[in-house]
Amino acid sequence: MPMEEPLFRLPLSLLLFLSLFLLPTCFSSSTRDLHILNAERRIDLTSHIIKVYLTLKVENSGTSPASEVHLAFSPAEAEHLAIVKAAATSGKRKKMTYTPLDVKSAELPDGPNGTKFFTVTLLTPLNKGETTTLEVLYILTHSLEPFPVEISQSESQLVYYRDSAILLSPYHVKQQTTFIKTPSTRVESFTVVDPAKRAGTELKYGPYEDQPPYSYSPVLVHFENNNPFAVVEELEREIEISHWGNVQVTERYRLAHAGARHKGAFSRVEYQTRPDATGASSFKHLLARLPPRVHSVYYRDDIGNVSTSNLRTDYRKSELEFQPRYPLFGGWKSTFVIGYGLPLQDFLFESPDGRRYLNFTFGCPLTQTVVDKLILKVVLPEGSKDPTAVVPFQVEQHLEVKYSYLDVVGRTVVVLEKRNVVPEHNVPFQVYYTFNPIFMLAEPLMLSLAFFLFFVASVSYLHVDLSIRK
Picture 1 (cartoon, helix red, strand yellow):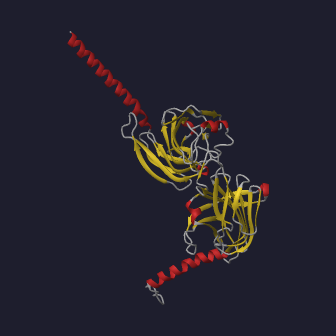
Picture 2 (picture 1 turned 60 degrees about the vertical axis):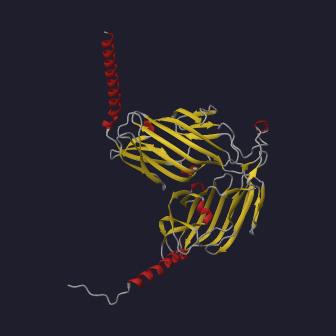
Picture 3 (picture 1 turned 120 degrees about the vertical axis):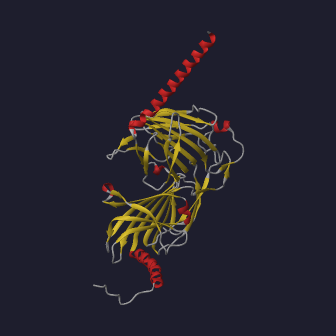
């Protein structure tokens, strides 16, 4: 039986026009259905890594269920955004529980130019009249501007922080408050957006009532921050797996002090005799948190081995406290290498499908450090095939080949690259691969062959030599 023809057909151009017209309308209606009853933002400026804790109480006032909540960030924040996390809360006070939520980058057609959006997916859709509370953490790097940009050895470091007293949001916000915590009570100046007040190390903006979507009120805070601005411009971590029982880790650092640049001459005598009055923003100690049961630790720079280090180990962790050859002031840099070995059984496991996998920690072992570019290389044993990396966040991946002693076909290297890495990226990741145990005989056979050839060559040489003597 032939199908009936539709009563009418719309031209393709008209359908395309309607789809482009209705798409922003759908996004706009979804943002109009939700509004924020209360927003509380706490900005921690005590370090050069800025942490922002945001609590949102969201209500659905529309007729259809809502399964997503959008977060908005200004272009300046988006440029320096390192990580965004969200969780749903339930319970009260001490019995409160947190359930992690999925957060992904998104696009909103009706947003201001340059605004970056993230979508938080709720566990269950929010029906009409229902509310939910979200806890959001996002971290910013390179967001403190030294002013003055150059300081002498005896001066303290002052910085600017720029933000908005009013939360940037695609929703109508009924009530909101912003708290800014500074590392000391020395605040040179701050923008006043009434109501605003300062008490000790805390600035309070708000509460502000009934703010329309995408409201923005810029503020500037000028304050003292002498915490070390430790930035690793590039870190290359090489993790080499040996099925003979060892994991060898080599880390190459290019470290810089990203605070106010040092001007004038440096006096080591004054620096050592008056440590509290000079070089307040400099740093000479670094702390690296390494895995437990670490062994064969070494620390060297371009000149050679550096002995100013102290290693503390126990069954839970290892801590390496070390000093560069010279204290680091603003604008100064240092390059060095840290290496150590680990027992293979602590990090290499077998999956149910027969594949082997490495379980290691991503990120940088140095505490309170920003890594502009991290290159992590996992060198698999020769003969490994089908490598796959599982990382809980987005990274760039590619494969390389490395040749070492007695290698025939070379070793597969899984390379993971990520920019703007902060301590919150120090989470486990896995590299899966297949391996035929027959390849473990490759190196012993190569050694046996080398000794055999050496023996044959030696005997031949002695025979020729005796023949000549005879």
